[in-house]
Length: 191
Image 1 (spheres, rainbow, N blue to C red):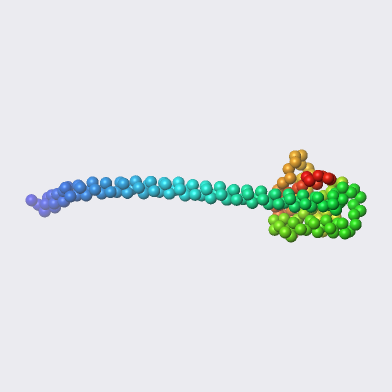
Image 2 (tube, rainbow, N blue to C red):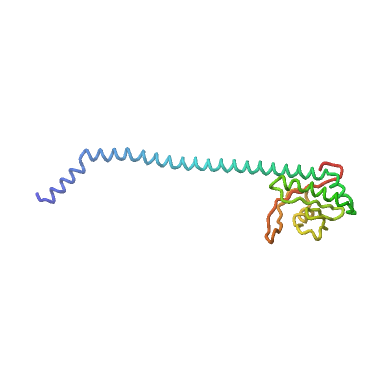
């Protein structure tokens, strides 16, 4: 026998032996379940992670909704409080705008309270449809010359009864987006 034949016989005998056949079967029996467990673990971990992200998103959306609802309720309460002030009613329904200076100062003080107390309230304006003027912290101005009138124009031009609008205002040359809350004040009522 030649050396090459012996080598081939030895190699065939070595790798075709019972030990190596059993080792291959055992390897398959071990590797297949491990690979299956890894695949199952991977897909279940992805599913768990997706469910956690969805639950977190739902919680955050609920918190944002609850916070926004609370803020809108507080804004409406502040606006109702301002609207029930007798000086405010006088300003809104007197067509001559001949109120004394102390009356306007009193109204401006009432309007300033929510701005100081609530960090999400930026400004409060009072518009009187009777005399066509807007009262702000800067003073009284006709609607035509009022500098921050975009939101008020939107509110006056709408046909439905929305009290919440997204509007823009120019602050220091930059447009700033606001969530504007409007409240009609009707003489002698709480709305």
